[in-house]
Image (cartoon, rainbow, N blue to C red):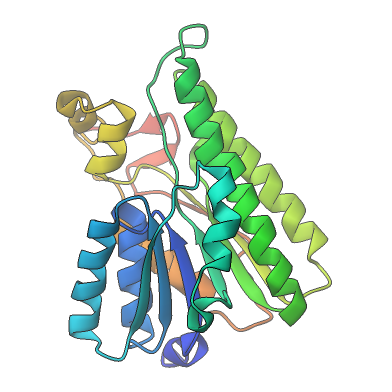
Length: 266
């Protein structure tokens, strides 16, 4: 039964945004392992040197793996269509889109939130995601197949004080994804939203707290959060189901968490 995973992923082209670190990097590793290297990866992020290092790591283990690392900042909406048009022919037909790139900036109460942080979070988490999804779904419709996997968050379900903007972006993503799934009901395109709870990621928390290591460390203090690999495994699992099976939504917590604001700390 589990041997079918590699067969179902074989030869597919997977586009992962935010692939240079965190969940994106773990997802690239998980797809490669699950497909035994018989897969094509478009790894997109802002830091090309990290993508090149990831490519070298993966291809050293799986020589037949095909990887295209490419710079993409999804917050720069005007660059997304040229990015897709410039993909080499071998990588141009996207079978699986993993919209992973996202940002959380600060925990400031409403009324004190930096306007640039508001713009950055909406451009990255919502507007860029929508633009990329619209362009990719257009080509998927022509083939009547494909997977669109959105990295949402429990924050889209459980808004919390200090998360006014981040929670709003994830709620917007959830609504957009729901509508997309409804509109594609007469196709074989699968629309999937993964909604993680607390995931240990130094980079995500450091970005949120603008380099404050002490505040970033406190996010995980006294608890055992999910790992990036936990989320990556779920993404690959969702993408490797039978064609008529879709994991529409998946809310995933560690055993120490019950909601966005209820986390057990020893």
